Each structure stands twice: as structure tokens, then as C-alpha cells.
Image (cartoon, rainbow, N blue to C red; front, top):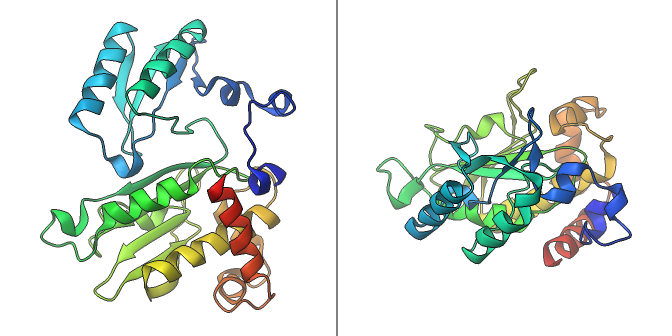
Length: 259
């Protein structure tokens, strides 16, 4: 919770001993002792030059490349001593860590939305990019996954995510506390036809309330199910500000975003 609220650089000497191996190396250790590296591709967007750079790095270090379900590229087989050079080259190509190793925001998956799709009613990719850059690096009790779909055909599978957003003719529907994994849970419809500012404010409040009140290693789905009153109570707290802490939650998130 403290890391989430203050969001200081995790490799500062005072914090380094608290980090898992994966956090220290910005990579995921694999079964053979090598590491996988996942650069961030917000909403799955990547330029031709970015793809070429990743390909050249993978070829240079003989890394196995795999497109992930989160719409980015995972590079496997990196040795520990290679990681600084790999990340240096990725950073020079404009990439940053995708936090695939952290208890933090992983990805914001999206469809192409109204920019390209004849069924899209809103710019889902643009919103997904905004959300990913807003919440990237947010430390949380467990991993957080998001998605934005540009219409009710739901190509981004937003109703299976911790935070899911689906476009409507009038705005955005917000779904919360879904997940896949060993015990899949369909997200609950939280609010309908929100404008973008209200949507982001609601997500700010919900995420910070989750960070404040969830147990360590507790996903949003289990957290909400354990709340007395469940989704109705959560709506009262987040949308109606029944506890009078809405502005405080927004300010705390703003400090994290600024950091």
C-alpha cells in the first residue's frame, strides 16, 4: 500500500532489498534460469520502426519472440548479464518496461475502435493508450489488467478484466472486478454511458480504494466479493461518495500519476 501511494523509484537503495528478483531485473525468470523481457506497447500499438528494433534485438541476443495475449511481444532466453544491454537498446528505441513481472498494471488491451472498424462507435485504442500511460507503474496488491472495446461486439474482452470499458453511442460503460485464470469471473457492470472525464475519475477512485483496502496478493474480484454489500456498496463509495473520501482518493491517484 505504501509503495502504491508514494510510488518512489523501486531501485533506490532504501527500497532495493524489498523487491523480488523480477522487480530488480525488470524481467521474469523462467524455468531454465534465463529471463523474459516485455517492453510496453500501450494498447498494442507499435510503429514499424519499433517492430524492426525489437526484431533486431531479438536476433542479436538470440531471443525467442512470442506475441502475448496482452498485445505485446515477449522476448525469452535472456541471460542475467545481458539484461542491462537489452534494456539499454530497447530504451534507445523508445521502449520502456511493460511491468510484466510486477504487482501493478500489466496491459490495457484494445480493439482498433472507430478509427478503423466499421462497427466501432468510439476511439477505443486512444482511450486504452490514455489509461495505460496514466496507470503504468501503479503498485497494487496484485496484478491489474484492463481492456477497452469500441463496441458491444467486445473484441478486447473487457468483461474479463479488472477494469473493462465498452463503448456506447453515448459514452462508455464501465465494468469492474473481472478476471481470467484458474477461477474466471465475469466483470460486473458498474456504470453506464459515462463521459471520459467521469470514467477516468471513477477508475481513479476505485483503484485507489482497492489499493487502500485489499489484502496483499488479493485480486480485485476476490476483494469485491469480500466487501460487505459487494458491488452495490462499491458503487455507493465510488460513484456516490458515501464515505466522503472521493476527493482524497482522486488526489492520491493524481500524486501517483505525476510521479
